[in-house]
Length: 243
Image (cartoon, rainbow, N blue to C red):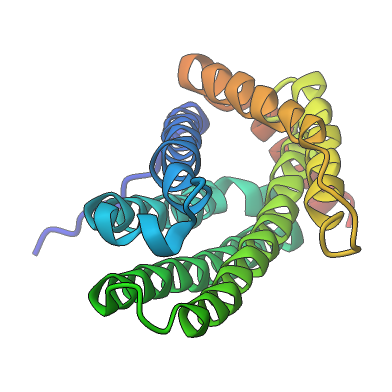
């Protein structure tokens, strides 16, 4: 019986996969929130009047949004073998926060589908019991709002750990990783402001978009730097030989 040797991907190969997933995730996230959902949930007439007539758009946004959440977990799993060589703790934190973020994203999209169902009930009622529907709509809208920001906070934490792991491991240029760490902190600050009762400052979110784009393009063209892995392996050999 012939045993198959497990395929071990090189750091460059892992980096290119992670870069592609990051780029797809960023693009899909923009489409979900700004192209598909924003006109429905933030239109002048409100989601009660808009969502039922755009049911296909809303369902597409939910499916695409869940896919982006799954990609976050996929990135953590793909990078796991490489990250844990440098830090088990950071690899575990990145995976754990990615899973929690995906769970919160699922909760957010459950509320979006609830908003759609409420809009359909409102349309079927033909304008009857308007005050009742408005009260229910307000509750569901705020549930989605807070689930959205909870997801953004946890996702920001996962991104912070990602860039921190990249900085520590030197798998990408440390300037790029340091910019990502700073951008992630600005992002977390921005999305925490509504929880503290302040208006969100969207300018604080923009650097993270630029950082993700730069990281995605770098990884897709160069992959992870194998020298960081070799230096870490050499340091481990020296440490073990001196023990």
